[in-house]
Image (cartoon, rainbow over all chains, first blue to last red; front, top):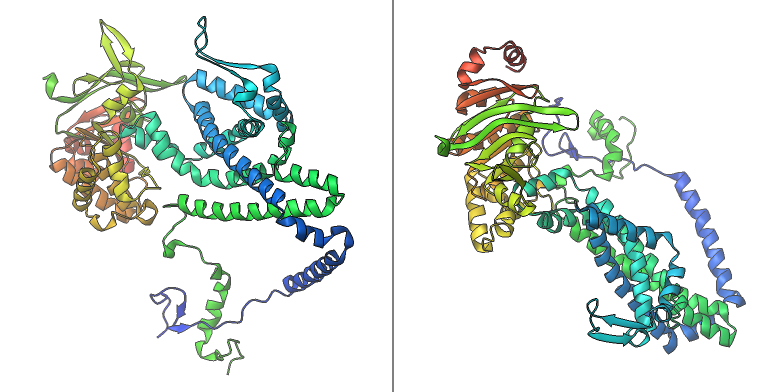
Length: 328
Length: 255
């Protein structure tokens, strides 16, 4: 009846019987969790009653028209600048890795400048753009420009804020994208080259889609970071983002703490939404890689593997409540 | 004579830095011929194979595929490097199969096969899919069209890789140790697919350690060592009665 070769059907069965084993207990883990719960409850209870937090004021301002409009502005700043930054970041990364030495140098120089100076300083410079370059002229050298525009008319502070945030972020994203591209096996490049695909086709069709799996988690990080970096646009000076608006209101009403709580709650809400989006993006780009067939997947139940041997000793001695009793 | 030669290598040399990997390889492959390249690792077989479709550039000598110089254009006795686009154009008629398959992991078997015909040859999707299904049926993987490479065994992946190369209707197929990364029991299915291809008249150059395949399928066998061709000829003759000491000592280790 018993043989050294396990029966077909996997490790779930031994001698045809399902395993009933005592689950591994984690007493230290439970005690630790209990202590933390006590601390959290105490903190929340205290915070709820602490007058400094002024919860009624939080409730009053959380959906205040000015705040919710500022929240939308912050979201717009984040999304627009991030979209531009990703596009520019990919271009910069591809340039950095291209065989063209001119592209390589341009990309390197861009990164040197934009990573080497604080974003707050960069935003200030963008705010001063119309002072430095009062007129925008479009045309060819030695000819009269086709279009001449005062800089201040062409770009408002909102647009300048987006440009400032995007150009700074692009430098960081370029490095993330470059790391992602380098993570793709060289054989992929060779295979598509051998098929007669051009360098550009290889990049866009083969290399970049595969690098996305590596790129997305850090980009998710950067989006969240960007959401909060938008609070610096006051340097431009743009003053209708969530943080600056909250600060301005609190300066009038002298209730700083509840208004910063309001801003924090909005930032948290947006961050939560972005994290959900990241989850779905990651799933999309895990195609063919994360999806190992069930038989190749590692299961967490591997932790109870030794119990299989115990069960094999005497499968009859398994009381129905799941506890392994003594040998009858 | 020259117009029947699919590959014509004349004293081809290649160095990586100070390391000369190929030291004047001269050999020819006729149309419809199956040639096996054997030799110890580091002998330059794979490098030579990669020179044929210009994955590596040749430093010295001339290498012609189907009468056309690889990687360069000769004008008034002066060689001009080809533009990347022109090099890509040369490669599309040369299929290559790699030791590690190099299937695109983010695409299904079918998508792997239709990618190059659609992007490079601008074949319509319907036509490319039809041809891909035909190729998958030929290698016995019709039911795996929608599987990702990660869900296929090594042997199945390598057969899909062969189908992917064939989808470009190549006039020459290069195999770079196509069975070296496979579990022993999966080697047979890949060799069978290659044998079938040889019987259909495909011109093939196969870098391999499978001497049985060389004996049975190849028209010629070339033994390389240290970047030079040591011995070449009919595989049955070379394998049973090697003329050079180096060939003998290599074969005694692998046979």
